[in-house]
Amino acid sequence: MQDNSLYSAISCSLLNCRRLPARLNAEQCAAVIGVQVHDIPTLVRRGLLHPLGQVTANAVKYFSSAEIQELSKNRRWLDKVTKALRRPTQVTKAGAPNSKWPGPAQALREARGRCPSVTARQEPAVAGA
Image 1 (cartoon, rainbow, N blue to C red):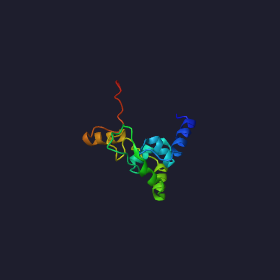
Image 2: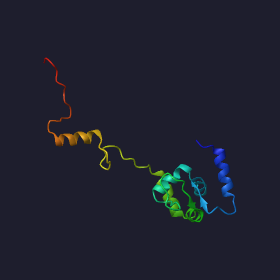
Image 3: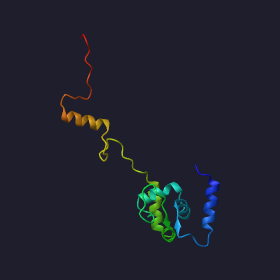
Image 4: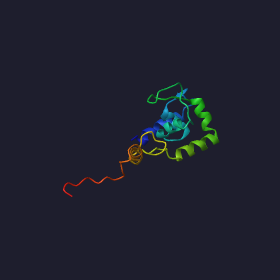
């Protein structure tokens, strides 16, 4: 959990600068745009923010301050950001049609297709009955 007083101090010092640095990290970018730090990966994933360079998924991402300032003045872009952050992230459940891993129901259907002797519920054989 991030200390709000520390975040506020960093945000205020950045926003009170006469000139922003050329590159902004995710925390600085969030302060300029007016979103939370944990929203930045969502915006990158949805294509609304583009980090500098070709970085790997787990690398620290930097953003162009000139581009961020331009985007933060664009009302349409801010509307897209608001909608993207309001929309929940789509998580594919196991067994859903788009999932690459079958869920238990789908695995059972496939097993029935391969072997007709497999049924939904097989009762164990009782000895002596």
